[in-house]
Length: 257
Length: 257
Image (cartoon, rainbow over all chains, first blue to last red; front, side, top):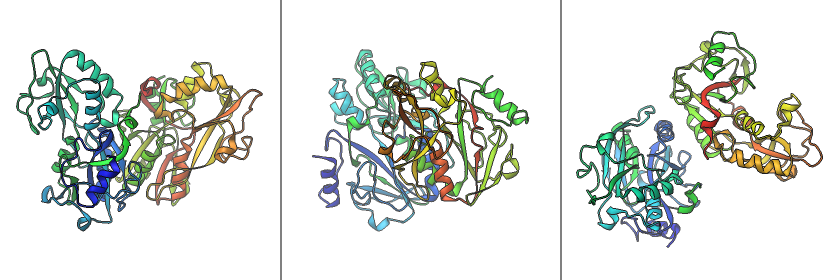
């Protein structure tokens, strides 16, 4: 399976479910579509907060083709499922957004943790939520994002427990993947970044932290989504959580070192 | 001399001349100010053409303070000299742009070759136009930039002649400075990138290419200026060539490796 195969299955209506594990080795991306009037602020927000919001591609207004990462693809049809928002309220959850399309929409594709999780697994570093078959635990922190126009809010982080030695390996791997959230932003005491209890995530599911392990925290792609929802733009389209866009990029394309 | 010293001298009207060689070790930047309505296209153009247009900072509309690279500075007063443009025509060349300021202006600070030239000199790699005390030679190429909205055009490059061994050193140094145009984009045959005659640059001055040397070409910060002038926005402000903005960043802050 390639990224193109997954996109074709989406376009033909054959795939409407989540994408984790599909077309392994191909980079998956978060999607945000916004009217041009809101796009400058959002582009600036992503630029200023590159760890939670690593941009893989940004389209021209009205152009549904992500030319940099998947030439020929159509972002209106090539994801398994979408969410359509009006003034911050969810109004539809279609599998195709052609009927909602507007000529002023700019599409943002944002890197995702699947890329570095694959690299961690290959290096023998455990990814607990995959082992336990649940969603990754995510937390709001007390770290403020750099605001940009109408967008602001706290950094949201994901957490994976591991030993000190695994943490070193993970940092070495992830530091070379800045377009997949880069190196961890914190490890150890959750309270230091405003997390009261790792057993009670704000999003996703709790996972087991074993004796000898510490929680390790990464900037998370839910950050821009939270900022987006808080800003309540009149119109926006995003992917349905877990239902990502498959690019033509290979995981190794994102590696800088 | 620090970046802040130079800015203060500009603000007080004591410095209105060129900045090369001032506050050595501090990063200098190109300035482009555009109305918000044009800022999205320009931000996207810079993002898609990061080698000629490496962004150091982008302000919010109406905010003259470049918070990321020089907190407390005022981009309306802290450069030695400016150019004011209307519909692509130069209309003024003031030393202060407070009277031209608009609440919808977004400021872009773009990395500059001085940063890597300092690094080359420290490594013993010659910089011929400095030796010959002229402006760097620059050329339009046949390499098209990735267009973005109303901005498009050819990549403009600068050229420094050197031996094959110096070229290896230069590439190693510059590859670690992506925010100062990064590694060379070409070396050797000028015709391969559409340059008919290195002795006749499109901008700046010709320099001597000695026996045993080859021309080495870098993406150049004149690229976004050329795209800007061609797009003829109703209003824009830039720095006067050679009269750059001094940031608080040290050259070493831009080094990624």
